[in-house]
Image 1 (cartoon, chains in turn brown, blue):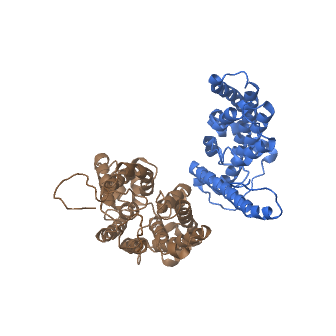
Image 2: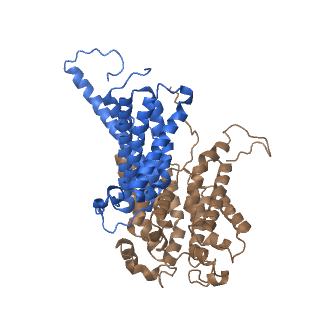
Image 3: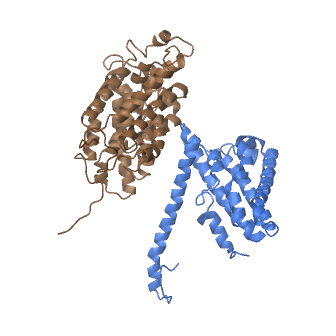
Length: 350
Length: 240
């Protein structure tokens, strides 16, 4: 008889990384469908292009590192990184901008740090921040004008042409500033009602964007229901954003209103799909609450007083820096050890 | 002399490769990261640092027997500051535009730890000539990394190479600018400080990779030479 010693973790989830990542991909579908319906084919093309580049870059680096290709590619994490970048980049981003973002994400942010599980920063957001800093023009002027797919959105041919030809002339009539960008820059000289008359806002909160965010919220709810993510990060992130907005930006004639903060940018995608990355987020539930609230507060601060219209990438990256610190002060309770006897005995949570 | 004197080849090899100030000691990062956005900036700062390092090493070595240990560091800093002032005034006189571009980073050479480090670790314990050679080689090692990083960042950041060289080398260098790719969009990330961190990281990785490869090649060649009639008896460990 052999007595084999296993190293921790001794209890494991029944789901493999590969299956979890497949569920994450499925959960982004409502948001992606909304993006396609309201902004044309751009996001779909971006998603496919980014996923292809991500898997190719991952395979190339794994080859260089002499790691087993099949084993690591099968975990689908590279594909998810590509997917998240495709969802967050502007719809008509030129192909080389998205390729740069994906390659930076996979090669620099993920594999150079040691691959899955060893990266301190969210790879997709490193790629996004890198291209946002590097190509400010391409990253701000290529947001598709909201328009229904069968109505005024650019067709598949036009979309492909503008993304892959490198000549951006074809899309001049199809692009528009994002609602957050428009509001932030106009509110200094106009009233809220005047700003909201701009066609990018439509009749609701922010034309198209509200449905995209609703789609990601629904996908996030699916992930919560499947217990792939816990509620701590999304809830504390949204709470941080809401509290900051109510405390500092209640006057919509001076600051972007709360509805736009929640529904017009990358908030829901960030809260449910990006900030919840298990590798780069805090570990314990208490830590997750601090981490999420930090992201929410930073998103509000950068959106309101910073130079960039949206700030999910920077908020997440800055809190990634803080994760080792947060983890140090919020260690999870060791299994079998009680912190304190409160409530009914024998009830174990988390 | 408390320290065994190093041979000249060791000094040269240390400065340029084995103990390179930028790639191995990772000293002097502030100027290294801040001004290497173009080749000409790197060249200007590299030359200034090289001059200061040689001058300070020589001067520190000359006074090494007259300054007591307790006040040696202030004395070194005074010497370095004097040479930096000389370099600054020279640049102000001959390359005024470049002097303005480099700005605060010329006076900041005083705080470059690579210079104080060499003064304390080498020049204060060695005679003038080896100290001068050490200053030259360490300065060159730093200089080469500056130029490499400047070229890398200028090429990836702006898509040019050797732009504005006339600021340092006079009007005949005005048309040296190379533009390998037409319509290069420019990558602002590489022009900004984060690009310098990534670039330096890649250079350090390249250096370590070369070292590892050379080491493994040496290891694979070692048994062959031993079998070819070597009479050395290996007692323990590796024969270097």
